[in-house]
Image (cartoon, rainbow, N blue to C red; front, top):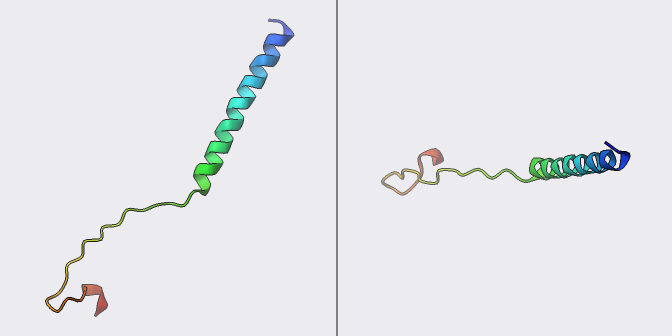
Length: 52
């Protein structure tokens, strides 16, 4: 392989690894969203059980 082909492969692989690094950085610093179960059983007087 000539030097130009090696250089192109090196730059292409470097670009891909750079993009993967940026995407992993963005994923790591995004806020985590948790889906919580909002359905709670109410007592007869309308209060939640945790408000005692």
